[in-house]
Each structure stands twice: as C-alpha cells, then as structure tokens.
Image: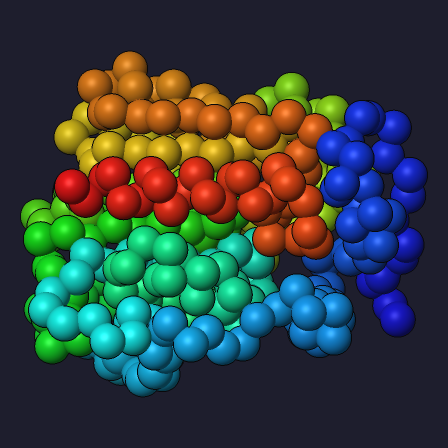
Length: 323
C-alpha cells in the first residue's frame, strides 16, 4: 500500500516487553493522511482480534451524542459514566492523539473505558475535526466548544462543573495545553488540572530528541514535519499562534496544575519536558514523568508492565487532582 513500509530495527534498548510491539509496528508516511487513517483502522481491528481493544465494560455506561457550537460545526462526543453512579461526578475531557489528522471516538475507547472505571469520573471523548481538510484552528475550536458545553449543559450529564480535568495524548496534548491557554485568555473558567501525555508542543522541531529519533517505533521526527504541514499548511509564513503550538506562548503563569508524561525514545520527548519545565518556572504546580525504555504511545500499545504502570499512575494522578 502506498505510504507504508515495515518498521526497521531500532538500535536503542527498548523495554523488553515493548520490543514485540515495536517489531510489529508498521511505519506510515504521514504525508498521506488517507494511508494514516487506514492504518489506524487496521490497528483497531487487529487489537480487537488480539483482545487488546475492549469495547464494553460492565462497570461503565457509554452514550454517544453530538454537541453543536456557534460556527455551525457539530462535534460527536462519547460520554462514559460509572454504572449506578448518582450525583455529580468530576469529569475528564479526553482529547485523542493522531497527529491532528487521524483518530475518532474508537481511537482511545479502551483507555476511556478504563479511565472511567478506575477513577469513577465521567469521561467525555471529543471527535474533533481533523487536518488537512480542517486545519488549525478547527479542531481546537471543537475542543473548546465541548469544554464550554461541559461547563454548562454538561451538568445534566452528572458532571460536577467545578471539577473538570482536560487530558490529551500526543496531538491531543497540544489541544489540551492550548485549551488551557485559551481559557485563561478568554476568561473561561479554567480546568482544575491538565494532563499532557507525550504532548506535541512545538512546531520548530529543534530539540535534541527531534534530531536523534528519525526511526523510532510508533512515531518519528520525519512524520512530525508532515504533521505540522497538514495542521498549519505548507510554506506557512508569519508568526505561529501559541494556540497551535503551545511552546510559542510567552507567559505560562496562571495555568492549571499539570502532569506531563514523556517517553525516552520519542522525538517529542524534549519539547514535552521543556514545556513542563516552563510551567514549573512560571509557578504552575507540575509533575514530569519520563518513562525509560519506552516509545511514543507505549501506554496503549501491546501488553507490557510499563504500559500498565503508566496508566495506573495517570488514574491516581487524576483522582488526586480533583480532591
């Protein structure tokens, strides 16, 4: 299939339990968005066959609906609520990854099921618009609109509107950070916490990890170039907004407390760590955890103790954040 190739051997000492996943991971040229989306669908099918993609949980009720916002866009969301739960619960707005150009409500469905079950929170996943058909700021506008909905009508879904967390992985981490920046600048009540998992933050791509990791499993620096071209446009000129690339923000003070996770063998490692460092320097309570021997998206790929440990930590951090 055009745009696809087998993953080459990676020379660094990956966690032994992640090696099989790394060998099986098919490398996709992100210059071709349709190939990327086909591969995402293929991975979901394979994960289902392997029993790694769980569609249901007896402890969680799941419901899909559509949120409309002022621009006329309609944003599908999936709402996860603990079965038998009564009263208002804290909520997590979860924003999936996918390089701004792939992903849907199934993309992180098992994670959201588990997050709901393990935290007891309402989890809301947003199916925001994707580039290149809908470049920046369409996806971010969708995410902000869903957040605004949670602050108002979301109360009817059993959400405690005073305890809303925003979390996201990879490109979803960029959207999470940008949503927090916009909430500060636009006077929207801020989330109580932000969770950034191996986040995209900087379109300049000038870190040591970006230079070093051109062939890492799951994600590499060559595809970062395609990602930004799809999201912001090729041959772009002029200033890049901090709402597109949060590392561009000059002032990070007054933002919600943060948890930032990075992976040792991820081209995004250093920009995520730098963003965490800048949050901390700006007076924002911030926890940074880098997982050794891991690569991008390791926490949702395959079965490995380090993956389970990472997710367990995420849920513990979320529970603490709203208390």
